[in-house]
Length: 239
Image: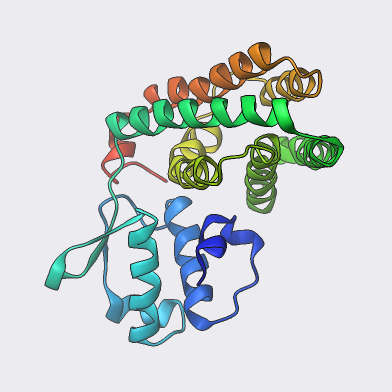
């Protein structure tokens, strides 16, 4: 699997090998809480669940180690990476630093194609947000993919390949936390209005306002996660 493939939204990629297919399915199940934080991932059990051989499953698990969603324990196998408030605070602070800088760069250098990509991504995201109230699993997955695409479109004109690369990694790391806050115990929040304000400020080329809105938007998810019961971070809560 290429570096470019690993930094794209995995759900948006058609698996070309058994390893990629197993990687995508395992990743989705970890993010959605099917495999709880800290849970031991036994190859001999999971190979039947995912209908692949033991070698293929180990390769998929090693890719998830690279994503920091799985922890390798030497000869003791693999576990789902733990989650914690301290970890998410670190993820969030670093994401704010990188993503706001990438947005500033994009506003300064983005052209008509960049603007068109933002308009298209925002339109698709808005349609998905209209369907979120149904609380359908498929709708939730659709929203997550389109939300990621919108955020990536915003910073796609940044001249720094490395900022975009690490932003994708941080975004992927935050997905488990975001799923908890938005879909397990939602709080009063108009996410569409937040995206609308961010969209309008960016197209207006108002970097100061756009980065301020983006910062607040990202930090609100941290505030929501802080309100979650402690057992959600130990794997004992209902996911």
